[in-house]
Image 1 (cartoon, rainbow, N blue to C red):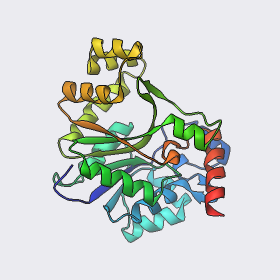
Image 2: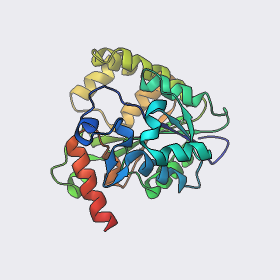
Image 3: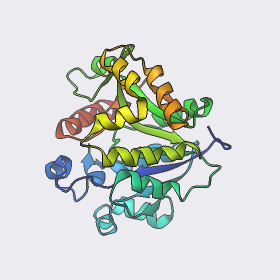
Image 4: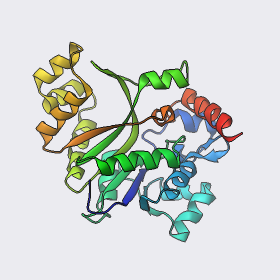
Length: 266
């Protein structure tokens, strides 16, 4: 994955919209600082990152500077130098790229999001260790939907279905220097978000898309197709932690996360 066995973590922590359901429900001025089981979710993420000996430093992209005083614990960590803060830009991909620019080319990057309220040191360690073992330029954390349903019956997650199973994203990614170029594709995805099939066909090619639509495409074949088209070797890292597939985008997610944390922390 890289020339060092430690990562710089880049955390995206800005709201995507002005009417986020979590901020509306909790009254928080930004989703990243909304409380989940009594603690701002960004603090939960930072705690998990700081507990890992595979994370050597943390860069936070957002929330906007005027919001920082609304979360004194976060503001204190920035003041103490435990976290480096950058102003967020007008899209997640641009913010990620700005964060990447602060990292030496020899150092791999670990990208995650502030709404990963169930992130734990164990998830971080497992994902980063497996990423280091891989020979990929980029890795993507995934969880099988069956394990999520088994652990949290009734949970509603976005699922991508392949011939060998359905998978949910975990908002966990790593990149070596070459792998960072995949952000340019991410920017295309943001620009073409109202025409997703055009982007998918452009990246995967029509034959791969047809196989997917017919239910014949495996997860490995999909990643191989991305690697061939982009010249960036991407690999999936399957995680044995169902909670890794639960982020906090909707009020139902928040209630689920608080239920899980309540069981784990009592």
